[in-house]
Amino acid sequence: MARDRGIVVMTPPQLPAVVEPAQLTAALRRGGVLDAGAVREVKVLHQRDTVVSHIVRLGLRYVGESAGAPQSLILKTANSAFAQTLANAGRHEVAYYTQPAPKMPLGLVPRCFDAHFDEESLAWHLLLEDLTDSHEVATQWPLPPSREQAIAIVTTLARWHAAWWDHPDLGETVGSWASTEDSTQHMEAFAGHYDRFADLLGDRLSEERRLIYRRLIDQSARLSERYHSRRHLSITHGDAHSWNFLLPRTGVADTARIFDFDLWGIDVPTNDLAYMMAMQWYPERRQALERSLLNFYHNTLIESGITGYTRGALDRDYRWSVLWHITKPVWQWSIQIPPLIWWNNLERVMMAVDDLGCEELL
Image (tube, rainbow, N blue to C red; front, side, top):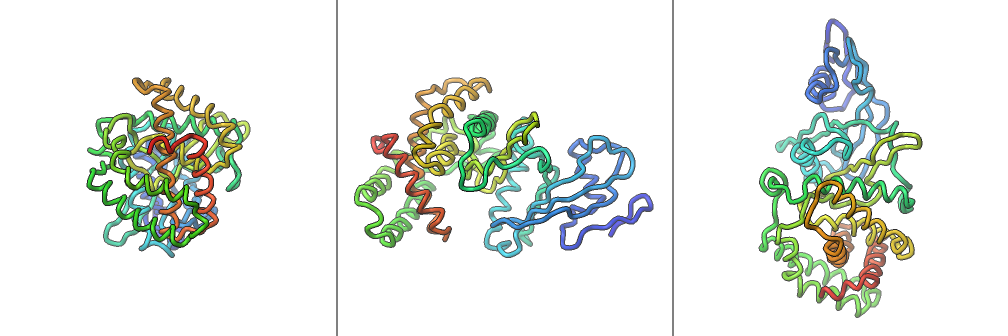
């Protein structure tokens, strides 16, 4: 409980101190959305758990002048059941909202008014813009988006990539580079997981696919040269399926937003496109949209001021990313993600490898 201008205000139980009215007032003032007024009361409108986090929608009431101030906010904290084991996800997402996000154009991600990770307690929180009334996820998983929805998603993704394309702060104040030694160690760990994965699947993993995996492992140092060139790279989402985008509701004139940044990093931008299309869509849908979406993506890069990156280079990078994504189902299996996810991902990405002739890269 706190007092503000003689009015008793209540903090909902079991929520971090950031939702105290005085702290919310300070956060909204720093964000430039609250001037003379102050938060008077906070109440929980809705809450739910995801795998790694707890999402609370907060309703706000003000005292004094509050025109333009948000009437609700999203508070994201750790899921208490996984607060210790998955603490790094929270640490990483807080880093996104404190490092690159403040320097990005508006309209690409939800605005963040406060972000903090406590290294001692491993507690963390994000205080985010609430887009519930204006935006929604395109479809229910696992249905793919419509063509128009996919165009909106890819357009926002291209603008988001363009904002940090070959930026001098990459690896300095934003994110970190993996060294060649890091890449080698990563692939050694992958090779161990793959051996156990292949043993588990037995004859459910064909000899043709086993050969692709063995060649990828053998050629990994050469294939990693694309990343280590540090050219035409940007920040990437790392989990850019279409259900991590919010699209404007019918009748709302706005842009799509990207959310959930616990896997972001510096990488080849086509990794996000390949994860969205080659990993998540079955061949008929992917083949119907893939080429035109890559065109929209490239055109948006050009409109955003990116130069020297040809349409042919985009195709080469996309095929490279599709090939690398055959590692993803193995990693997912290794952290006990259920077969419902990794088995379907394996089938879809292997069909994309076949369609796009990615074996030629080996």
